[in-house]
Amino acid sequence: MRGPALLVSALVVALVNFSAAGADASDGPPEKRELLANHETLAVFDGVNYRLCRGRTALCPERCGDSGEFANFRIKKYLKYEKPGQYGDPQQTTFLAQVSDYHRRPKGDPRILETVKTLKPGDHVLLSWRHDYVTRAGASFPERPIVKLEKIDDARAEELMTTSAPAAERPQAKSFVYKKTKQADLELVVHYPPGWKETDQRPAIVFFFGGGWSGGTIEQFTPQATHLANRGMVAARADYRVKSRHGVTPKECVEDAKSAVRWIRQNAAELGVDPDRIVAGGGSAGGHLAACTALTPGLDATGEIAQVSSKPNALALFNPVLRFSGIPRLMQRIGDDETLGKAISPTLHLTKDSPPTLILFGTADPLAVMGDEFMERSKELGHRAELFTAEGQNHGFFNRSPWLEKTTQRLDEFLVSLGYLAPNPEGK
Image (tube, helix red, strand yellow):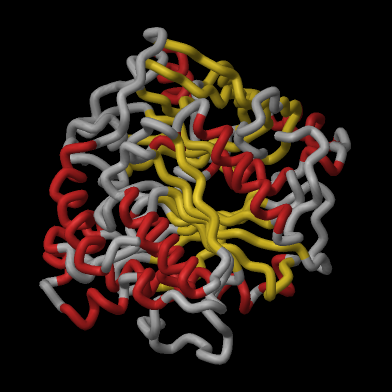
């Protein structure tokens, strides 16, 4: 077993290389497009507004392609919904279509743009779009192109509305504001399972996105949340404050993550959730936040109900940061505050009774040494922790196929072992 000094030394070396490592570029065909879900809806046009991106990259907001004008549609009824892909989006309550770039230059399918120009707020439309999973030049990402946008009159809309829809077509996701801060209201998107009732006592999971405590998007864990909702859990994705959008440090990120877990437990009765079966998960910086909700002492937001615990009952950590203390590159993010650095170093606070934990790392990830340190400490204490490794994979490997599917399946198995899910006869 390596001593503490050797472990910290290895961690420092890892972090020196981490910023240049990036995501693993994989070989493959120039483009592969998989249909995950098909949405055909009756919707209402709510106008066009200008939105800035979430600040995920150095190109943001001007050159990333995600800032500009968006047409807003409110979904009134699903006319058809298909989900041939395991990780397809659930049914939605709203849809945004980008119609211009950062400089307000037209962007998108010209036919769709022309139709949008003819619409007035309150107009009814037939709106259809696809949820595709695209792999291009080694990168994988979702796309949601509109395939139909047609204005209809009120009489036709009324006719469509009066046709009864089966319960399975009701929207399966809902957004809540779980916390108000001086910088922003923070959103939590909840995915409900089929047959959900408010009186249920279902296990829940909340995911925190990655992005170096500086950027990132709440959309990141949509595939995993959708899968677990379809398996019977209440699955949530939480926004939190980040440096690029809100001018905060990792300290405030940890505070928000704790607030999200506390909000779910405090509202368990309305969410149909068992307050004693809540899992916190996340990737990279988001994995760090999930770990901190369970292991970091203090850093709870003022004004919240302290009697409601912000500590989850289990952890699912995708290539997480597990230590700040002793890592100069990370300590710089918090002004070299050693007290805070130790507080937000989850491994330092691990005990025998800490929540059971699943950690997932690629073996080529510079942060994998943090997983090794956590596992060694867990073994010393007699704490339950499991490590999944992906041979030769780098940071962020779990975001792309086939590791998206493999890591989701491993998470599923972990939750089955806790009794949070029933065994999956399909093995998916």
